[in-house]
Length: 265
Ligand code: NAI
Ligand code: 15L
Image 1 (cartoon, rainbow, N blue to C red):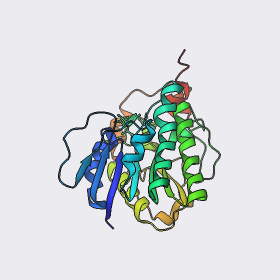
Image 2: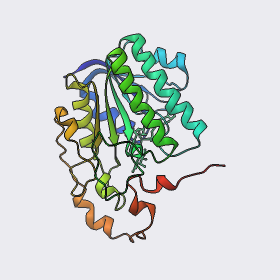
Image 3: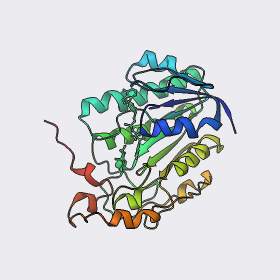
């Protein structure tokens, strides 16, 4: 269970910094990439290659020689369409095209709950539920999932799209009591996503073993993902914060405040 070379995009970001450490056992060499400066510089068994995902030629060179890709780079919040278009939409296209040209057979795509953010928190979903993106960011992740599906059907490149809930050191509010994904559970999910055979395009919700959840992962049971953490130990701390109004989007929608972001003009 160790590949020769894995590419991690978004390596300078919040999750990238964590995954730089925790995915180390999964490859002999980790190739780390971001548009932002990265510290520290490349250590043993690491390569650092700065790259703008919107630059097709640069992404093509970046992907050459890797066995799998962890695609965590891009804009991670709601922003004007033109920004999302370059980093996330053109970016994911460039990545899959490079994977096709260089024979990369496995991608783990950091999708997001904002693909289904306009469902209410009292609704229950699985991987077959129709999408309800809550903004341009959610739309770009929806496009990314469709890229993954298409590149599997057309070219046999397998992807696990992880619809990450909220992956931070701790759940920060009441909504995250349901959506929280611990770093250890994220790492387990990435390990399963890299090494489970015949995943085709699998869609899995990235959440820990939280008490009240909105998503059902039965359609991804072949991954064998067994979360070990739960948001429950943080309940008292989270519930000591003032409760939002019952009609506040953070209390109504699965995507929380993202549903009310924009317009940007
Ligand atoms: P982040 O914003 O901290 O990291 C994203 C990284 O991508 C940044 O370092 C940024 O410089 C880089 N980036 C942005 N535009 C780029 C471009 N054009 N070319 C190359 N790199 C570019 O976000 P975070 O929290 O680390 O998330 C990582 C991934 O996981 C993102 O794709 C995000 O959408 C996804 N995700 C994260 C969740 C979370 O709870 N942390 C929840 C759902 C999805
Ligand atoms: C995301 O997709 C974002 O990247 C992250 O920053 C959080 O906002 C998360 O969703 C969430 O919904 O909590």
